[in-house]
Image (cartoon, rainbow, N blue to C red; front, side, top):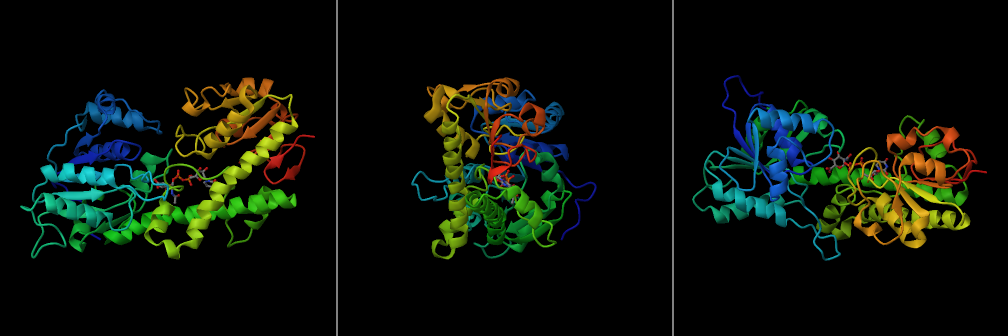
Length: 438
Ligand code: SAJ
């Protein structure tokens, strides 16, 4: 591994393409390290917000950091690209709309096209977006086609003019700033020289260990990390459905099993949400459809858990026809305001469509209910009102504010705790994850 940047090194000008959940914190952290950063986004609204020193997303401590680096003149946002020394691409990679979970790298290629227009000898281009294996090489090929005046790595004789690498982010929403600087990084170069160049850049702001590899291995590493977690959550979710059938308390079983020194079962929930773990495993399946039965099945199990929860919640609501129902949480996980691909949101919306104005939604992180609740009759209420007025509580997200509700305020409620946040709920486990008050 190369040494840290030396005192007196010229700090590169950096352009970060995409100012979303990853791009904006990344741009801010690079700026904090003293580099001049231009952040690029297609939304004028996002650009204006950042240039005022404000932010358009919720993330711990990000507002203060962005405000500080904008004030110091180190971070500026724009819709138009400009020349820089290092380009970091952090744009979304969704699925195509074909229903086959085909990765859509259109945004990556659009970003690479923009970068190619201002690329010069000596520049480094780094892709951070989660991408199918081979995307960095495709990006290189695209830029090489657009800039025949430059020599590209792996496509020329002699020393290339530019360096191209893949370096996935692996930060956890809610802890992004801490993890961006503290986590280890895998840096995959199109060639070893490209990896070393990118390494020198990351060393400026990453405290964790930076390990170099090739671009394809780094791309696969990112997918594997999230598929690993998905498979492990699927195991927990499958157990919860088995335990439900057998009348066992899955939380108790997992607690006991995890006392074994080599067992560490994850936590069941209403399904797996977010834009990473529920998405990335499909990128592996798409690349090797005949060789990925486990990864595919894990996806199916986790999606199936969502339907299991809908069925159990429906039974419970039907069994208590005179009670108001509170769904606790819409976010895809605890303590964040991110509702993308959220199983909680999906379950609550299905209940709202079926039971209309009996259903009340408690989500302290949402200003309004999402669009799919319109015309269902369901309404948003605060936690205090839900605890006073609703006889049935369906816990869908383990926000701290829900977890800390004392037993006295819920002891006589009918509770379906899909997250296992209230182990002391009376009534005992009628079925796994389904705790009924007596
Ligand atoms: N979940 C469970 N049970 C668990 C753990 C999670 O049901 O035991 C659910 C959560 O409630 C949520 C979903 O899984 O719905 C995903 O949550 P998460 O906290 O596991 O992960 P993300 O999507 O917030 O972030 C993941 C992280 N990847 C890994 O931990 C391997 C993060 O490090 C990545 O940077 C991020 O994906 C990403 O951007 O790819």
